[in-house]
Amino acid sequence: MLKMTKQYQYKHIQVAVDGSKEADLAFKKAVTVAKHMNATLEILHVIDTRSFQNVSSFDSAMVEQVSNDAKKKMEKYYQEAVDAGVKEVHYSIEFGSPKSIISREFPKKHDIDLIVVGATGLNAVERLLIGSVTEYITRTADCDVLVVRHNTAGLDR
Image (cartoon, rainbow, N blue to C red; front, side, top):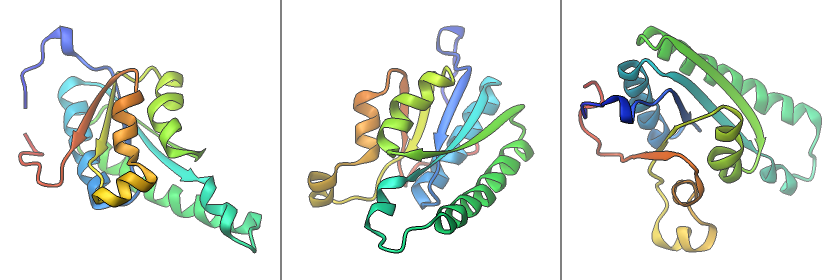
């Protein structure tokens, strides 16, 4: 890990998680950085409400089930961060567009100075058609963004 000077000291780190392998790697890296910098860690999960638009039998029970599943996962991430020694940890579940919430809305509300995200598994055609959330975040975020690749070594350093 880089030796950080006060000039590069992060205070509020955000990591977005979605249950993917890439997000789990990003979470581990965010925990390591937050612990080393004594920073607050904000764990974020965004439920993409656009996915509900195509469901013909959309009802509140479905939203409640998705929310409950997300809450269980977030509590697990929270406990893992606390057990790893991060002093201040919060988690949030938001509804809406992952791209705008992760890159702009949440960081602004929570004074985030570093966003940690996993590199996506999209291929070139998928990126062209739908765009990568990670790529969007790196282009539009007002703070630093750390993209964690699948082959990242030294997560425990």
